[in-house]
Length: 137
Image 1 (cartoon, helix red, strand yellow):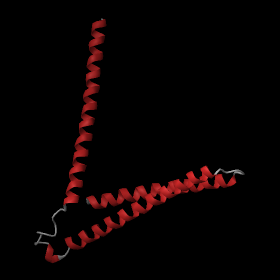
Image 2 (cartoon, one colour; image 1 turned 135 degrees about the vertical axis):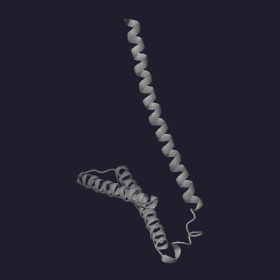
Image 3 (tube, one colour; image 1 turned 120 degrees about the vertical axis):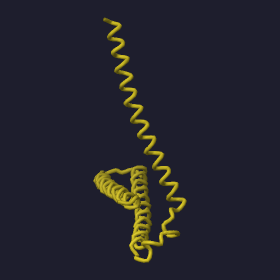
Image 4 (tube, helix red, strand yellow; image 1 turned 180 degrees about the horizontal axis):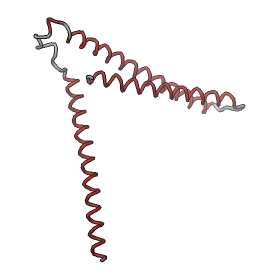
């Protein structure tokens, strides 16, 4: 899978979560409707939650649309027979994509470093505990 396809999958998952959140907000609205006395403040808070959720869904949909267009464009270009051997200008990575790749690579390096540090700290803790036990004996 390409990086673009991975991003599409992640955004689709986020969109699914937002849809579930929207359903929860609908349930919350039904509960508010059942109450006899409802303050304006409660209604405004609920309205803000709906608006925020809607804005996030629209933003995710826009990103998905752009990524799908980009993926289709790359797919169309890569399988044309005349382009199989002439891979010069069309296949260069844009500066934005390159920055994203670098940032993700740095994130991966940092997470690996943190995992190694955790392992080292566990080992160090075991060694210190062993030394304490030896001193007690």
